Structures are given as structure tokens and as C-alpha cells.
Image (cartoon, rainbow, N blue to C red; front, side):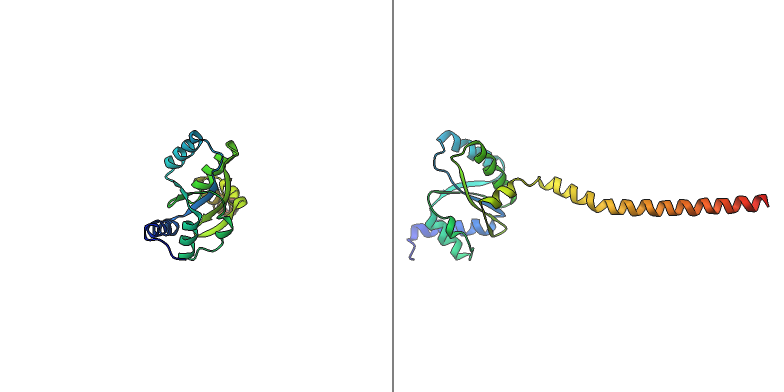
Length: 174
């Protein structure tokens, strides 16, 4: 399909954004009031997430150009996309939280590290604990076996010391 020169710039920009994004959410925004949309945009901007309304044709062309598979079935009806080049979870968390409050916002799909996920995947991603909590849990689970090993070794060393003390006391009394 031939793209008009004025739209080539839009497709090129979308290709760049899709290539750089760590996480994105595609949503149907029909039914949101202007004040609700403004509130959503403010929350996304505060989190460093770019939000824009896109033409499905332009997004489809950009996705095909970068060989992003699986997005086509979700490109029906009005579409807005929230993208983050830094945090793959931020767009999902904010959009999912907002969709709970305002039922008019419908999650269509998402992107995580260049892979398309469905609406259920976006909601599951949004329910993950923050990155810092996941790292803390992982470190805690890694430290647990090490602490256990240290306690076992310390107990063994303590038993050896007690045994040596008992032998020394027997020699002193003999």
C-alpha cells in the first residue's frame, strides 16, 4: 500500500517509538469524557509514559515495517497507545487502574519488549508488584538457603568446639 509523503513521517515516528518502547498498551478510548482523558494523560505523563491517539492504518504499517507480529487483530475501532521507553510495566499499571475506575476505557492489547500480549496479559502485568519488591523477594529467597547453610555450619563448628573443650577438660582432670 502506498503511503502519502505527509503520512510517511508519522509512520517513521511510530516505527521509532515501537522499536524503542519497553512496554505499551493499546486501548479503545471511546466514551471517555474530555476531563477523564485529561486526567489519564496527566497520570501517564507523570510516569514518563507517552500517550497518543493513532490511526490504525499508520500503526499497522509501522508494525509491519519493524516485523512486529500479532498486532493486526487488535487494530479495529479507535485506538490510543501508551508507550514507555523505560518501564515496561508503567503503561499497563496506569491504564489498567484507570480502566477499573472508568469502564469506558477498554484495553485491547499490549507490547512488552517487542512481544504482543492480549488484554488479559496486560491486566496480569499490571497486577505484578513493583520492580523493587520483586528484586527484594528474589534476593530474600536467594539469601535464605545461604543463611540456612551458615547456621548449619555454625552449629557444626559449635559442636566441634564443645567437643574439643570436653576433651581438654578431661585431659586437665586426668
